[in-house]
Length: 288
Image (cartoon, rainbow, N blue to C red; front, side, top):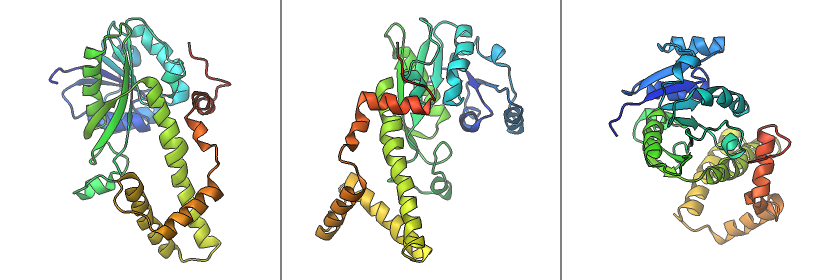
């Protein structure tokens, strides 16, 4: 796509705002950076970018990126959406608020969500910069999962424009996978935070127990855990090698000791609503 777009980044001085702005600054798109907090303004200006008031940046934008915390999205979108031109795209970075119906809407404005997958554990890396980029958006390629909701149901142009911005702000990007807002919410948080990130934290706790309770030297325990975590993921997710019979027995014991029998309930809609309500500090999810 060769179309040059006008993009406004709201919250440009925050953690994600700075990340996406660093990449957008390298593109031919016209980008405005809006920030209100003194610390955020200082970060934006220190990066060599000019801070533009949202009232000036938003009205002419083709795409407005709301790089603000989930808890602020309702208020921020309420201030931004009425100022957008018809056909503009509001792009958020996490599906929770969109799925919960907290975002301000307009019949002639497109809503989009795009969340980075982060570089895969199986990514083939070649440079020190790629090895160092565990989060993505700097040197290591990553995929992105995104959703677009066009008011008239015709999301062709909106998807094309959204993908151009997504590939720019999360660069380098391998693939953009298109799903519904609900499916994106099922992936994040259920699949990757409720399950994968929790297991990562559990691995860290297990490492600490091996050192403090069993007295294993930390370097030995860490080396054993990191290597076997790579093998476990390769064997289960890629089918690289079969586990030994003894390992399968130990895995069964681990499941019996750690995992609840009803754990798959987290994939139900009511449980998704429950965890999102907790994340958004709501009593309940009330979608329209």
